[in-house]
Length: 420
Ligand code: ZN
Ligand code: ZN
View (tube, rainbow, N blue to C red):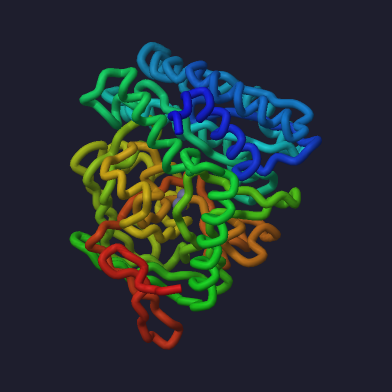
């Protein structure tokens, strides 16, 4: 078979995004954006156009795109007056809120420069990030309660590709990153939509099994990690597919290899060591350790980006605690690629991870109906942040702990110890 052109692959990708990721319904409207950089960079226009075609193809009423330019963020951090970082025109957030309140679907395209703010004053970068999180929290709340069908996908941005494949010429690096995106998102398969259906079914089986176990805690053991994490009563294990409050079953991340649930915000004890670097607010944080006591982060250290990590934790009380626990085998197709992506959408699907900050309401039975206070007293976490960081490796063992204290292997040497 002749190899498919980039354009043909983009078309197949767009179709999978619309039919599986968003599961866009006829008559729905769609908004496309990239929250972190306040809009989709123009370099992603070819993908945006294909997604729009596919969206109209399934009967979308209207497709709106919020464009942006990430360089504007860096420029501002460099040149704007020091006392000006409270400015934040809200019309972009208002536009997104307007569409969410109308029941429209939301697509976020990830792929910005993971090192955008590298070398800049962490104080200013932290301020900009916190202000952004504050203004955007309305949207985050809608998304984390699955108010509408939403999806995050990636596009091979130029700077990002260069970060992943530093030894290649820019064009080659981008080509190779696109190939990785297509393969990990099953777009290279003869029928990507059917391949996704099969994948979703097998992930569901895994989540169902974990659900049936009703563990009250997980214990993690690996080099530099000795960590116990509580799972609250009513936690729900979730995988590839979720149900939105507007009644649409959607797949929030493409790719996705994780099975995840709600950790108890008050029960995390011990030390975890990161196994992947973390890109947060345009700063790369590397080789770090986080210490917990009674659910709360008491200490962070990092070889690189420690100030940014401390800023992240200091954002609010909830950023001292966890909001997600996810299990991913070390042999996941993304881990097997053998390189870092410097992008959470990919790296989180290569490794077991936990998230600092806000928990997803839908990971608690009935969580969508609770207010913040009720959610917190049920063990859920509330925060401006939700930042996944990777702790899994082929050396990690995880035990599930039952109510009576008995233990059961969940993962051994980074792989599922549970045969389905
Ligand atoms: Zn996750
Ligand atoms: Zn997460």
